[in-house]
Length: 244
Image 1 (cartoon, rainbow, N blue to C red):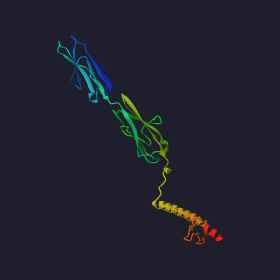
Image 2 (image 1 turned 135 degrees about the horizontal axis):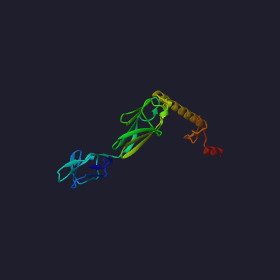
Image 3 (image 1 turned 45 degrees about the vertical axis):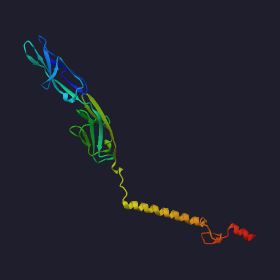
Image 4 (image 1 turned 30 degrees about the vertical axis):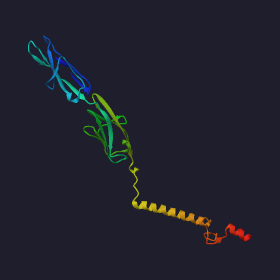
Protein backbone atom coordinates (compact mmCIF):
# COMPACT_ATOMS: atom_id res chain seq x y z
CA UNK A 1 0.00 0.00 0.00
CA UNK A 2 1.12 3.57 -0.57
CA UNK A 3 0.18 7.24 -0.17
CA UNK A 4 0.34 9.67 -3.10
CA UNK A 5 2.10 12.12 -3.21
CA UNK A 6 4.90 10.81 -1.01
CA UNK A 7 6.75 14.06 -0.27
CA UNK A 8 5.63 17.57 -1.11
CA UNK A 9 5.57 21.22 0.00
CA UNK A 10 2.41 23.29 0.29
CA UNK A 11 1.74 27.00 0.74
CA UNK A 12 -0.41 28.08 3.68
CA UNK A 13 -4.05 28.43 2.69
CA UNK A 14 -3.86 25.83 -0.07
CA UNK A 15 -5.65 22.48 -0.26
CA UNK A 16 -4.06 19.13 0.60
CA UNK A 17 -5.19 16.01 -1.24
CA UNK A 18 -3.75 12.57 -0.44
CA UNK A 19 -4.85 9.17 -1.68
CA UNK A 20 -4.17 5.70 -0.31
CA UNK A 21 -4.47 2.32 -2.01
CA UNK A 22 -4.06 -1.28 -0.87
CA UNK A 23 -4.71 -4.74 -2.30
CA UNK A 24 -7.35 -6.36 -0.15
CA UNK A 25 -10.29 -8.71 -0.44
CA UNK A 26 -12.78 -7.61 0.56
CA UNK A 27 -11.79 -3.97 -0.11
CA UNK A 28 -9.96 -2.46 2.83
CA UNK A 29 -11.30 0.26 5.05
CA UNK A 30 -8.97 3.24 5.45
CA UNK A 31 -8.23 5.63 8.24
CA UNK A 32 -5.66 8.45 8.29
CA UNK A 33 -3.02 9.40 10.84
CA UNK A 34 -0.74 12.41 11.34
CA UNK A 35 2.58 11.74 13.06
CA UNK A 36 1.13 8.45 14.31
CA UNK A 37 -2.04 9.96 15.78
CA UNK A 38 -5.30 8.83 14.22
CA UNK A 39 -7.43 11.48 12.53
CA UNK A 40 -11.18 11.47 12.19
CA UNK A 41 -10.81 11.32 8.40
CA UNK A 42 -11.70 7.97 6.83
CA UNK A 43 -11.71 6.64 3.29
CA UNK A 44 -9.06 6.20 0.59
CA UNK A 45 -8.71 9.96 0.06
CA UNK A 46 -7.75 12.69 2.53
CA UNK A 47 -8.85 16.20 1.59
CA UNK A 48 -7.89 19.15 3.78
CA UNK A 49 -8.64 22.78 2.88
CA UNK A 50 -6.87 25.99 3.96
CA UNK A 51 -4.00 24.09 5.53
CA UNK A 52 -1.68 25.81 8.02
CA UNK A 53 1.87 25.33 9.26
CA UNK A 54 0.76 23.23 12.25
CA UNK A 55 -0.61 20.65 9.81
CA UNK A 56 2.89 19.80 8.60
CA UNK A 57 4.10 16.30 9.39
CA UNK A 58 4.08 12.66 8.34
CA UNK A 59 0.74 11.47 6.99
CA UNK A 60 -0.02 7.78 6.73
CA UNK A 61 -3.07 5.63 6.13
CA UNK A 62 -4.14 2.51 7.98
CA UNK A 63 -5.88 -0.22 5.97
CA UNK A 64 -8.19 -2.67 7.74
CA UNK A 65 -9.42 -5.98 6.31
CA UNK A 66 -12.76 -6.76 7.92
CA UNK A 67 -12.48 -10.47 7.11
CA UNK A 68 -8.97 -11.15 8.33
CA UNK A 69 -9.13 -8.33 10.93
CA UNK A 70 -5.61 -7.40 9.91
CA UNK A 71 -4.24 -3.82 9.82
CA UNK A 72 -1.54 -2.52 7.55
CA UNK A 73 0.11 0.92 7.71
CA UNK A 74 1.45 2.75 4.67
CA UNK A 75 4.81 4.44 4.35
CA UNK A 76 4.51 8.05 5.58
CA UNK A 77 4.05 10.99 3.24
CA UNK A 78 6.04 13.95 4.58
CA UNK A 79 4.07 17.16 4.07
CA UNK A 80 5.60 20.58 4.77
CA UNK A 81 3.36 23.66 4.92
CA UNK A 82 5.19 26.97 4.41
CA UNK A 83 4.29 30.64 4.56
CA UNK A 84 5.15 32.50 1.33
CA UNK A 85 8.05 34.97 1.49
CA UNK A 86 7.15 38.67 1.49
CA UNK A 87 8.51 42.07 2.50
CA UNK A 88 12.19 41.36 1.82
CA UNK A 89 14.40 44.33 2.78
CA UNK A 90 18.11 45.15 3.22
CA UNK A 91 19.22 47.55 5.96
CA UNK A 92 22.73 48.91 6.50
CA UNK A 93 24.68 49.69 9.64
CA UNK A 94 26.05 52.30 10.09
CA UNK A 95 23.81 54.64 8.11
CA UNK A 96 25.29 56.39 5.04
CA UNK A 97 27.65 57.90 4.21
CA UNK A 98 29.82 54.78 4.21
CA UNK A 99 33.52 55.74 4.36
CA UNK A 100 36.23 53.50 2.96
CA UNK A 101 38.42 51.85 5.56
CA UNK A 102 35.52 51.38 7.97
CA UNK A 103 33.15 48.42 8.15
CA UNK A 104 29.53 48.04 7.05
CA UNK A 105 26.87 45.41 7.74
CA UNK A 106 24.07 44.59 5.29
CA UNK A 107 21.17 42.77 6.97
CA UNK A 108 18.51 40.89 5.00
CA UNK A 109 15.09 40.32 6.58
CA UNK A 110 11.73 39.09 5.31
CA UNK A 111 8.43 37.65 6.48
CA UNK A 112 7.41 34.05 5.88
CA UNK A 113 9.08 30.65 6.13
CA UNK A 114 12.70 31.43 5.23
CA UNK A 115 14.63 28.38 4.10
CA UNK A 116 17.55 29.86 2.15
CA UNK A 117 19.25 33.22 1.60
CA UNK A 118 21.89 34.15 -0.92
CA UNK A 119 23.79 37.39 -1.59
CA UNK A 120 24.75 38.88 -4.94
CA UNK A 121 26.62 42.01 -6.04
CA UNK A 122 25.99 43.40 -9.51
CA UNK A 123 24.46 40.06 -10.50
CA UNK A 124 27.37 37.93 -9.22
CA UNK A 125 26.89 35.41 -6.40
CA UNK A 126 28.92 36.30 -3.29
CA UNK A 127 30.73 33.96 -0.94
CA UNK A 128 32.68 34.57 2.25
CA UNK A 129 36.34 35.44 1.86
CA UNK A 130 38.69 38.42 1.79
CA UNK A 131 36.88 41.36 3.35
CA UNK A 132 33.48 39.61 3.07
CA UNK A 133 31.98 37.84 6.09
CA UNK A 134 28.60 36.08 5.83
CA UNK A 135 26.78 34.94 8.96
CA UNK A 136 25.92 31.26 9.35
CA UNK A 137 22.25 31.87 8.53
CA UNK A 138 23.32 34.25 5.72
CA UNK A 139 21.18 37.00 7.21
CA UNK A 140 24.10 39.45 7.61
CA UNK A 141 26.77 40.34 5.06
CA UNK A 142 29.70 42.18 6.68
CA UNK A 143 32.36 44.05 4.69
CA UNK A 144 35.48 44.88 6.70
CA UNK A 145 37.31 46.96 5.70
CA UNK A 146 35.02 48.40 3.07
CA UNK A 147 36.64 49.65 -0.14
CA UNK A 148 35.43 51.99 -2.86
CA UNK A 149 35.38 48.98 -5.21
CA UNK A 150 32.71 47.48 -2.92
CA UNK A 151 30.24 50.08 -4.23
CA UNK A 152 27.44 48.60 -6.31
CA UNK A 153 24.00 46.98 -6.27
CA UNK A 154 23.59 44.29 -3.61
CA UNK A 155 20.76 41.76 -3.81
CA UNK A 156 19.52 39.36 -1.15
CA UNK A 157 17.36 36.50 -2.43
CA UNK A 158 15.15 34.86 0.19
CA UNK A 159 13.35 31.67 -0.77
CA UNK A 160 11.57 28.49 0.19
CA UNK A 161 10.17 25.72 -2.03
CA UNK A 162 6.91 27.64 -2.63
CA UNK A 163 8.07 31.27 -3.04
CA UNK A 164 10.98 33.67 -3.61
CA UNK A 165 11.52 37.36 -2.82
CA UNK A 166 14.39 39.73 -3.66
CA UNK A 167 15.64 42.82 -1.83
CA UNK A 168 18.05 45.32 -3.43
CA UNK A 169 20.32 48.01 -1.99
CA UNK A 170 22.71 50.43 -3.68
CA UNK A 171 25.91 50.74 -1.63
CA UNK A 172 28.04 53.85 -2.22
CA UNK A 173 31.45 53.96 -0.54
CA UNK A 174 32.98 57.42 -0.15
CA UNK A 175 36.71 58.21 -0.01
CA UNK A 176 38.36 58.95 3.34
CA UNK A 177 38.56 62.69 2.60
CA UNK A 178 34.85 62.95 1.84
CA UNK A 179 33.96 64.38 5.24
CA UNK A 180 35.35 67.84 6.17
CA UNK A 181 35.66 68.90 9.81
CA UNK A 182 32.96 71.27 11.08
CA UNK A 183 33.71 74.86 12.13
CA UNK A 184 34.52 75.47 15.76
CA UNK A 185 32.43 77.82 17.91
CA UNK A 186 35.26 80.39 17.86
CA UNK A 187 35.43 80.33 14.08
CA UNK A 188 31.67 80.79 13.80
CA UNK A 189 31.80 83.75 16.25
CA UNK A 190 34.62 85.32 14.23
CA UNK A 191 32.62 85.03 11.02
CA UNK A 192 29.56 86.64 12.64
CA UNK A 193 31.63 89.54 14.03
CA UNK A 194 33.31 90.05 10.66
CA UNK A 195 29.95 90.20 8.88
CA UNK A 196 28.62 92.72 11.41
CA UNK A 197 31.72 94.93 10.97
CA UNK A 198 31.34 94.90 7.20
CA UNK A 199 27.66 95.83 7.50
CA UNK A 200 28.49 98.63 9.98
CA UNK A 201 31.16 100.12 7.73
CA UNK A 202 28.82 99.98 4.73
CA UNK A 203 26.06 101.77 6.64
CA UNK A 204 28.52 104.46 7.89
CA UNK A 205 29.79 105.16 4.40
CA UNK A 206 26.24 105.40 3.06
CA UNK A 207 25.22 107.89 5.79
CA UNK A 208 28.33 110.00 5.16
CA UNK A 209 27.59 110.40 1.46
CA UNK A 210 23.91 111.06 2.10
CA UNK A 211 24.80 113.89 4.51
CA UNK A 212 27.30 115.27 2.06
CA UNK A 213 24.66 115.43 -0.64
CA UNK A 214 22.23 117.20 1.71
CA UNK A 215 19.68 114.44 2.12
CA UNK A 216 19.18 115.37 5.79
CA UNK A 217 18.04 119.14 5.49
CA UNK A 218 15.23 120.18 7.83
CA UNK A 219 13.02 123.26 8.25
CA UNK A 220 13.82 125.63 11.17
CA UNK A 221 11.11 127.42 13.20
CA UNK A 222 11.73 130.58 11.13
CA UNK A 223 10.89 128.74 7.94
CA UNK A 224 14.50 128.43 6.88
CA UNK A 225 15.99 125.09 6.02
CA UNK A 226 19.04 123.99 7.91
CA UNK A 227 21.54 121.72 6.20
CA UNK A 228 23.90 119.30 7.83
CA UNK A 229 26.52 122.08 8.27
CA UNK A 230 24.19 124.12 10.52
CA UNK A 231 23.75 126.95 7.98
CA UNK A 232 20.22 128.14 7.24
CA UNK A 233 18.79 129.33 3.96
CA UNK A 234 15.63 131.26 3.24
CA UNK A 235 12.66 129.44 1.98
CA UNK A 236 11.21 130.31 -1.43
CA UNK A 237 8.50 132.44 0.23
CA UNK A 238 11.02 134.53 2.14
CA UNK A 239 13.04 135.07 -1.01
CA UNK A 240 9.99 136.37 -2.88
CA UNK A 241 9.08 138.80 -0.01
CA UNK A 242 12.64 140.10 -0.02
CA UNK A 243 12.51 140.78 -3.77
CA UNK A 244 9.25 142.69 -3.41
